[in-house]
Image 1: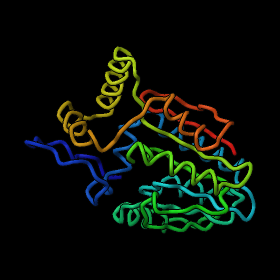
Image 2: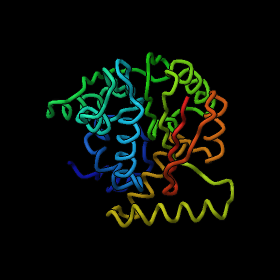
Image 3: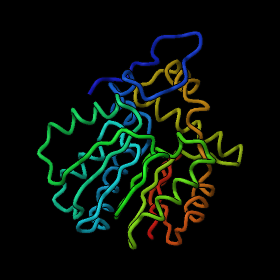
Image 4: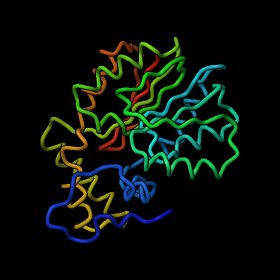
Length: 241
């Protein structure tokens, strides 16, 4: 795993964050050192998918990035679905996923699709995964996407949604930001790296509150919703059709 040093050198104005080849090369290290509870989310995503996947159905990982979740699912002997489909708009990320997947003899077929998820339609889905994906979409596009997913989700199927959140309470948001900064610092990121990454990703990653994400799921049609992990500033939901 290549170490993330993208923001280690000072620049006058960091360019807007994008999932290009530079990021794809270090993404696995970047997400582990930037997202509290990332390993736990991978474990729970696998457990939930094993439980809710059904024979002859399809599992979708929308915003599959470098394929870490796809490998976990594809390696499992307890996945009942016929196929796993990873969708991402970044060719560089999909190339990284392809290289990683080729190292394994998978139990379930995995297909990669390069597409903007707003232009992609799921079908015969028992599980749809959206881990740290919606946050990069314009807020007004998220409801439309979730409604489409709900419509094409099999009865009893689930969506797994993990998002960075913000608090509408200014004091609590200040504490959340402080805790997140300390987490990244404890994982070896310098103050310069943290600052420049924050400047780069501002206006690219657009977090909503926990309540707003819940309301998006409800407005899409889900009535059975549970929050199964919260390691601020990241929250994960399970919604069942």
